[in-house]
Image 1 (cartoon, rainbow, N blue to C red):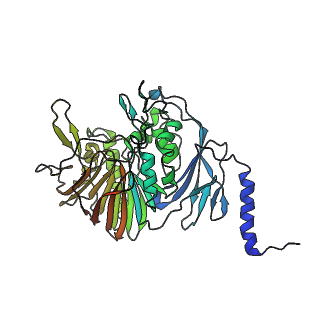
Image 2: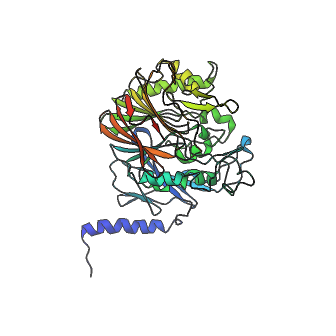
Image 3: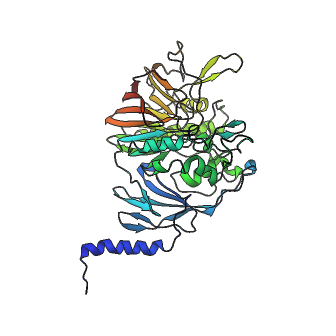
Length: 463
């Protein structure tokens, strides 16, 4: 007769239970993807997008926990205004919470990163998909032209505690133009297949490296890839009617409230949804203006919860982009998003609460840093991680009086145009960070010091 110690039984019983559970579900398929998303108050949720018929258990610290169905197995239905969208794979979306303090987690044979109470090493990426829109076509089949997988692998090598994506995940909206081998055969439209090619497949190594905080971009608005946003990425519970399926419900589906993610030691992120703003500005009669003004008030309320606040959204408030006239060659600068400046400015002429010291954004396809002698927060733009880059250079020295937002007086500025990569943040004090800019291979191209709301970089321009 063989006897087992209590300690050994405590290991064997969970293993046997898991073996039994595993027999009830299909093995993970090649398109299945697992990751951890961080939501309100730092709550961590394991997500699995799978072709299987049922949700497998989540294993946390050798305990098998049931995953709930977030979205039943289905294909994303084509909206009436997206009739050109081809049929796509039917996928099941599963989720389960990962408790704070957990040590290990895995699902369907894939290891998952567990959250840290005080993440000190952060990766920031944005604007990661491959552009297929009308006549604008990126060579999605060419890793040099669409290097997001390389960027993600290099960022994973940084061994981050947290990944922040500042929005715009999905870009493959239209078919590859005929006769263009660089993107021939690419999936397109708003179903899972295009989402997988654009984001889930190339991000795999970075999914395995750290949990993610996810900001919503304008490419995830209801009239674009909003259905996938709500099904796959939004950190809150899925709600039918708020899923962008029916245009009649877009007023609900286009907006969500801000939330805070603690970083420990008196700091937090405040993540806010700007998907439905417009650079053209918002008239006083536009209901979006009141909705974003309400977002400002909620941001201000959340900001009272920490001494040091970092805003995370898609649209910059305090940054520049550049356009070149095709006929004259003249370069003109544009500033922060006019719709948000209109709405936030109705509440606060400074546009963000004084206790917000840094803003992380994307949308403009470059890397950029600005710091101000006025009370505005330092702004970083990290929209340079995969989609076709902006190539019109920003000036090394701004013309006198040039400002990205009324009242914002630029003290320091740095930029990198036409270079793919990722940004990292290493915490060096309660209100201090070392920011590094890396190219697609992980090589450092610039570094900046942040103290409070001020920042300065070693290089004014990366070449």
